[in-house]
Amino acid sequence: MSEPTYFAVDVETVRTAPTSQSLVSIGVVELATGKWFYTALDSRTANNWLQSEASNKDSACDWWARDENEAAARELFQGDQLNRWEVGAEHPSDTATLAMLMGSRGDQGSVTLLVSYLQAWVRSFSGERVFVAAPASFDWGHVAAAFAAQDIPMPWSHRTLDVRSWICAKYDLPITCSRDEWPAELRHESEFAHHALYDALALAKTARVLLDIPEPEAVS
Image 1 (cartoon, rainbow, N blue to C red):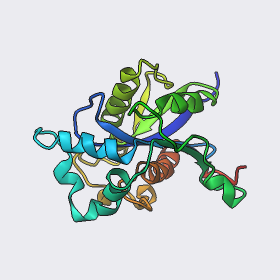
Image 2: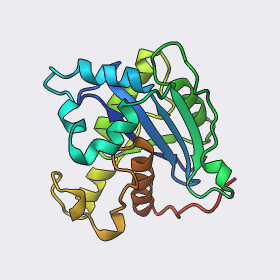
Image 3: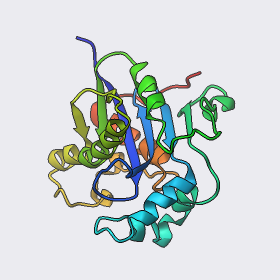
Image 4: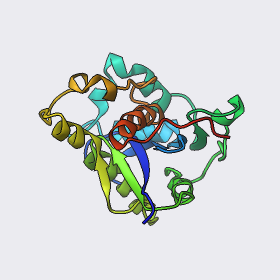
């Protein structure tokens, strides 16, 4: 039996409970190779979705308004960025690979995340594809809702790996613990907090320690 292929996943949303209009960006990193995929909704639509949730009890409006989230909120909800998707690698063999743009930044017509491109990218990896998140229940729900809204099958198997639960069980920590309480070898800070791609890259480093997967070498 072949080894599973693990994907660290992080999402940014406009509310806690998943809906067809809750997910505004997603970052995915394949653990063994360090290759990544990122897609984000156009900023105007993302901001409209955020403001439409303002009166809901599970709205993320107040959370995104916090000072520590300002940079990430500006990247997602301000300006004139259009629907976009990119692929790259953690340790590219040349600098151009890191910023290689594979999709159009032009007007995509419908205001939806480009999950069909994500599906094709994930399916390009062999073996059983496993969704890894922290916590998996949050990220999986929003991703599943986005795929269902476009009637596109999820590219991962039904098996998920919850990094937070694994760490708490392995190191006898309460499930409510902060990441500051995790063992040092598992604490990897995001280079851009609350940006889905950078958070997924940090999560990938933690997951590799748990799964005993080496850090990837340079890829082209």
